[in-house]
Length: 293
Ligand code: GLU
Image (cartoon, rainbow, N blue to C red; front, side, top):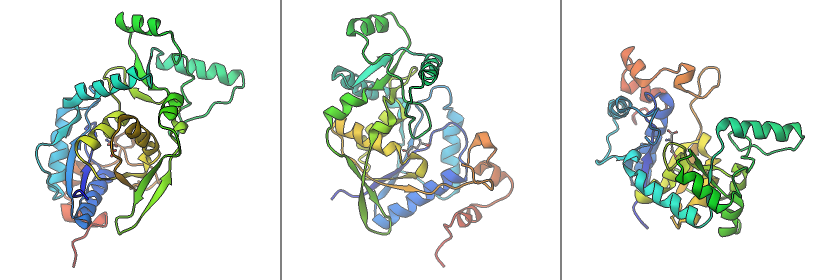
């Protein structure tokens, strides 16, 4: 078996908070248990929200916590051409299609269907499934609109994707203390998921599966909030002929009100804690990573 490789993959949209620290420290602990390596990956496909100062801040905060990573650190923004090539491959196989609907147009269509009392599914994030407006546009029309430069996203044709990767798909959930189990997946709950954004020819879902394969990731350790996305990830892996890592989704660190930590909710960043005089040992200990006595 290949030596275990794990990754911590933050998006540089802000400073790291305690939730990130917990995930990074848990990745390091599990890499230690498995005798594997832990890589850092910067998930900076968002050209607006990703900022260089946040990347520098991530590296600084992780070093402050005592976490150091092998160089070079993979940055997704340097691999857009590879993501585009995979997206086009899926397009040539009729598994993704360009979607010219604006967000407002999708919302209006969903509202119209609701008014007609047509019950529609929502995805695990609570977003109504895409109503399919652009799914069967004549190929010539879609090509002409793209050639004319009309903005568009790319959506997975879930029905075709499932037909191309038939049968029950499962993924491996591993317990860091030993043991694993197979989990049945149901990617259809995502509907025609968005796999290529309007501004960059990729998405979180597409980049993450391509990068996990490119970096030889064997074990993914990430928050429970991403567990449902694993169903979509294993489908994309099947369609693209990529290996599937084993997954462990950890509980999220929550604030006093039980909410997910986020900059938008005013959660303290590691930089804030440092500024307040907290040391890395107390932060680690507070998260359950006290040094062995
Ligand atoms: N970049 C994602 C985040 O910061 C994590 C991706 C993953 O671990 O799959 O939430």
